[in-house]
Image (cartoon, rainbow, N blue to C red; front, top):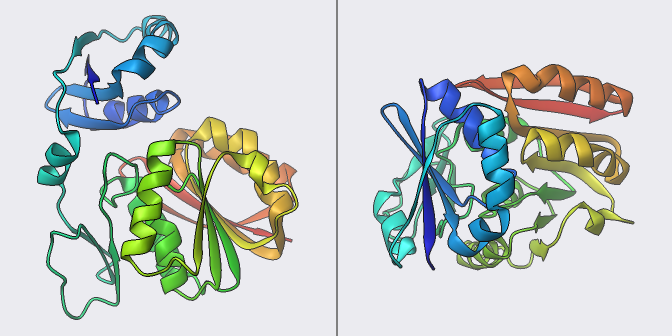
Length: 274
């Protein structure tokens, strides 16, 4: 697949993180940060379709940028060569199949990333995993914006009877299917390609949503409607400055905020449905 590389000067990691979150509203597959520079990668076909919107956003917000079309490359091989295993809270190992297992780790999720979000390296995934390790998970759950499926897989390892994993991106959907199979949880995790419209008539004991501010605000009512009374809603993809907006929306929907985690300017928020 051919990709476009967009290079954007940044003043530090905080600005880079904010810009990554904003650009995630479009079809960017991955990001890399260098000193003073954020590089964002998007399939060339998607860039051709979204170029005007992306350019308008960057110009309106005063962001300089340059664009280069990359040669057709085996991006999976490149991605894999830079993917390192990660341990969260000394309890959960997230690794690729080509990494060795580690004895003594309570939970292990094997992920072949293939450009999908959710390898554990981003602060928001770490925050979600940390929250899940603190929660007694049971019953039926939802992983909204599932990416690689890492959270859905961990949820059943933590005790959930079944998890629906929904993502709007076909690449993520296929990757999630592969990862569900490689972790041996096909009978307990069901992947779906689609959006919050799939939640009609569904009921869950917990909902996990690691997406971004705009989608969370737009779709939170759907999550709450599908959530059983007393159920937990765990959200991330939230920058610290977005906490008031998320909190206000949750309160309007009858949710009680019961906890949060912070890391590198990002926040995971835990709510309970009354």
